[in-house]
Length: 232
Ligand code: IPE
Ligand code: IPE
Ligand code: MG
Image 1 (tube, helix red, strand yellow):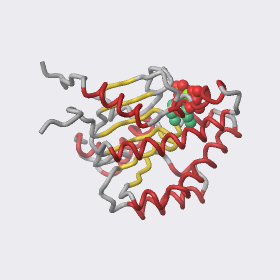
Image 2 (tube, helix red, strand yellow; image 1 turned 90 degrees about the horizontal axis):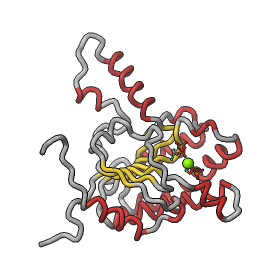
Image 3 (cartoon, helix red, strand yellow; image 1 turned 120 degrees about the vertical axis):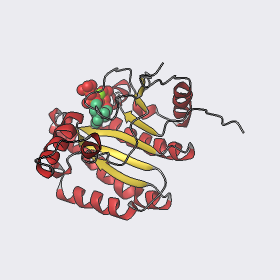
Image 4 (tube, protein in one colour; image 1 turned 90 degrees about the vertical axis):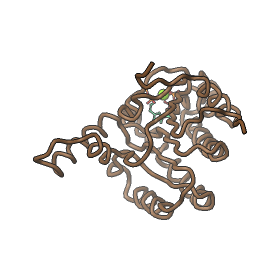
């Protein structure tokens, strides 16, 4: 039997971008764009479950995003806090496993507790893995893994397996497909190690406009890519 989509990515990375511009276009404050952006993430996760995607990694807040105004940063974290409350039962019901990549220690204690609690509650779920980058940076991740390895194996040569086991994504497949919305064509420190052989897609859509059709279109684009991994 023929599948509708022939080559399906196992692991999709999303650099959600354009929240601010989406709001500006409507004469709204930037935070209104972030609010809609979170609703778009909820739609994305639902759609990814329906499409049978194994892992979705979403770049929610980078190690560089602290450079934004205090108001915007606080506003983003308040929205994330709300989103966790709103989606807690849904994640559990839908068999979704929550993971976080990034240094959580810079987040408020209460948010850390909430997140850790939900990670614990969903850890045995076997459906989609929803991996959120929060205070995440690819360089930070690589340095962190390097330092952990140095501590753990002071007198050994570090293998690829030993190194990868210390990345935030330990145990996850590599990225197959990276989508960055809003027309920007850069990684901005997103999953530098895991994206080594990923396919890239840069639609012009602002992230808050994401819908199910958009994912279908992206999967179609992916299915036409010819991945060679260095072979002929
Ligand atoms: C992405 O949207 C969300 C985060 C980086 C937190 P932006 O806030 O970067 O939106 P633009 O790029 O200003 O439009
Ligand atoms: C990347 O978007 C970070 C996230 C999506 C969380 P930015 O909007 O911060 O990236 P630059 O500054 O345009 O590269
Ligand atoms: Mg941006």
